[in-house]
Image 1 (tube, rainbow, N blue to C red):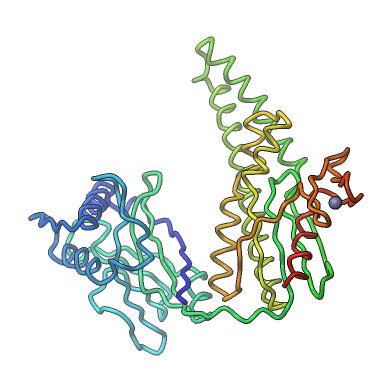
Image 2 (image 1 turned 60 degrees about the vertical axis):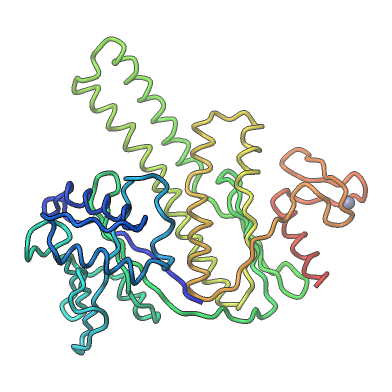
Length: 371
Ligand SMILES: [Zn+2]
């Protein structure tokens, strides 16, 4: 099985011609549709790389799906030459992207500006060296724009077979950040450990209310036409700074947890069971009549968490399954559970009682016994 991981590297804007990259992205879209456009002012080298790359890698996963709309910008696929510290090389010698491990740099030839012999150099990220040590190889790269900023995407590929699970199961229950991501390690019909992980909600909510307060002040200034003043600009900056900090906190937590859980699964050679109930959690928050902004905050980066968990599991060969584990149905008698004060779930039929976020773990135990 081939596993892939991608790293985005921001390219120096002053060394890149944004319009040129836009044009290459447009041509890439056409190439996806089977059109080879020979633009007389484009370097032959670039045209050859563009269409040559397509012929070679068209069926590859790294290019994602064909762009849906005509003329939408598609990231440009590029071949990669790897030069190792012992002077050995892998890949096409005329490739536009060169990973030079000997000198610790990445060189981009002719793809940032339509100018013969133009090269942009960026330092080699540690990420690339780490993937290489794990047995990965960077065969592909893509260049493109994100929020009008030029980026290089490096795609690492590794051939890996998932291990045989040892009998341990790591169940991951994805809830909103309000109650956190719950995980349980199961062995021999027992819940060995259980934890709910979330960022510090007080910090998040404080930042949120600070942003709201400053946003209101800014709105008041705007109504009297004073939002371009120093005070107005400062308020706007403060709102933006707080919102992006909230986003960064949940993003960092998502990445941290995905990595922690995959390491745990590796340690026990566990089968990873992912219960992605983000939609159910969103509905629960809606029922609690929380403001839409707060719901957005409590749900932010959860999709990213699930994606990262899956990507890392594939990369390290951790076998995984997506499974729905109910939290409102009794795991003993399958009667519907009723929710009491403090999110305790009670079965009116058999008397089963458990905190809501542990119910899926009981279901995972029950499924294990059935096997
Ligand atoms: Zn019951």
